[in-house]
Amino acid sequence: MSQTQQLLLPEPPQEPAQSTSPAASAPHEIPATEIPAPNPPEKTPPASPSAPKPKRRSLEERHALAEEKLKKAQADKDRLDKELDQKNRTARNGQLIAWGIGVETLYKKDSASRQRLRKRFSTLLDEKNRVRAEAGFDRLDRELLGDEIQKPETPFS
Image (cartoon, rainbow, N blue to C red; front, side):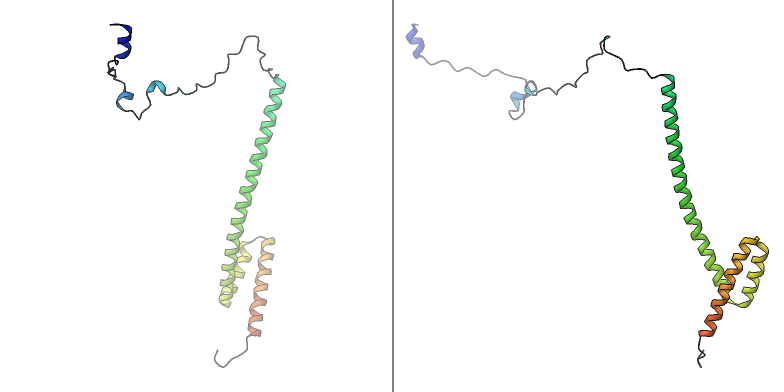
């Protein structure tokens, strides 16, 4: 064949090569060879022997740091203890108020209860608390006496 004949003849069609890769069977997928590899984590270069090492603290410096940490820990403990004491005090005050309301209610119930409570408190309490209890009983007596004076007599009562 001459060169002109070769130029005029159409080239024979080439058959596509058989591929076993998953990319050839699924055209919508990216072949594994085309997926970029993730960036490797940056590695710090190894410390050279000539690199300066951090200054080592002296025994006195380490001791001072330990004492500072201990003081801070003690201050934190004291603060938490104070908060806990305040919460406990608040709860105890609430209990004492409830007991006081109960005693007042019982005291106002009748005269036998009044006499019994006064006698019992005078034997159980020390001097300071006995004086406080007597002042409370006197206040209740004044309130009861005032209620009786202020109540008008009605024919239906």
